[in-house]
Amino acid sequence: MELGGFKSDEYLAINPQGKVPALKCQATGMNIAESDTVSRFLLSEYANFGPSFQPDNPISNTMARFHDIYLTSIQSCLYRAEPPFGTFGTRKDALKEYSKQLYILAGMMDPAGPYLCGAEVSLADATVFPSVVFATFMFPKFDSGIEKPVPEKIEAWFQKMKDMDPAFQKVFDEVRSDNPFDFCCYSFALWCFSLRKNISVQPDNGRTRPVG
Image (spheres, one colour):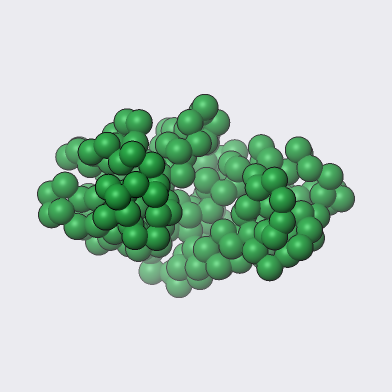
């Protein structure tokens, strides 16, 4: 369906907050908003397809939650022209906090890998990866005063995900594309669905079209 912009009546009917991401499920007519809610819906709805994304490891959910609370809340420091950036009044302070949170996530990684929580891909990988793509592109654009804003362990995981799994590369290419709307709306959905048999999401100029 044509959305007509985030503040249009059509989009507000899907997400009354007028923000992304949001998912309209054509099969049921259900409207779902907010990234954590959308991702958990997909994990539940398609639990019988491909990896579960929910290993028997509570660290996965902890990392995803830390990301959503402590990184997403200040991610505007990487793109917004002026403060505030979350609770921070300067970009430099927000960037330092963003880097600090990446180091906290790095400290929670399973050293055995290859995924953040060990041998099995999880919600943590799906949540953190797009933000690291963004951070690697945007941090060099600012004078953060941080010698190494993205931890080496995160960088190594990030590169390994791109090398070993085409789904990660797909998200990486999408974030680099000329259409930031596609990144905001579809990065997680494409990543998740592309790992599941016979299921895909096709973004098309403001349309949400689950196909499977």
